[in-house]
Image (cartoon, rainbow, N blue to C red; front, side, top):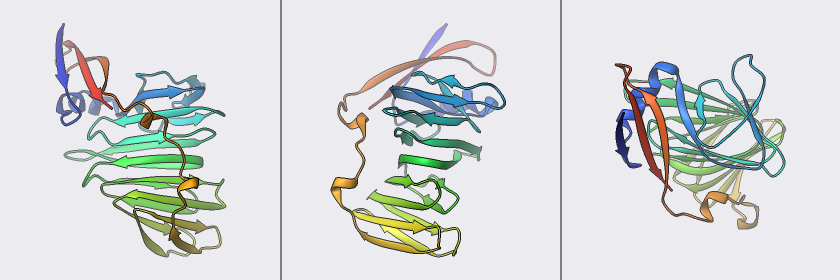
Length: 222
């Protein structure tokens, strides 16, 4: 068995491994209780190192937290407690186009430059190309987008209106079609547990390449 080592800046080997099975992300951190549903199978507990496939539904319980790393470009998705999402990915020539359907709760998206990434609810759509933001949804009644870095285009699906949300700005999108934007209140920005200990970490993944040869991939991340 051969061993390959990659840093956060390169993932071509892992990307070639995942495209055949529609695998799009990996769980790098889990706190408390969280479950996932794949297809018509019963729900299962999420564990660190789990490979996420397109169409997987993830739910976190009270006190739960899940951090994902997308395998094509190292974009990250942080899922806070009492959240429900469905993750979909579509392979393009050089990357995976990502769409996160948020039914309820809050997520943080840290998106690499020039990569398509969408978070949407029944009320709103946040589309980005290289940014960092929180998206909070209150069961389809009102959504909040808190810009941390870059620019997020926030669209209201009822009225069709759009506004750009920049760092330090919070956008509100309501079920009545209204869009608002104002200066962010630091006290309402959710806590990200992954920022408490920002030391470099490693994870080993076993896989088979296109020839059936078994390999170990070592992922380095923060």
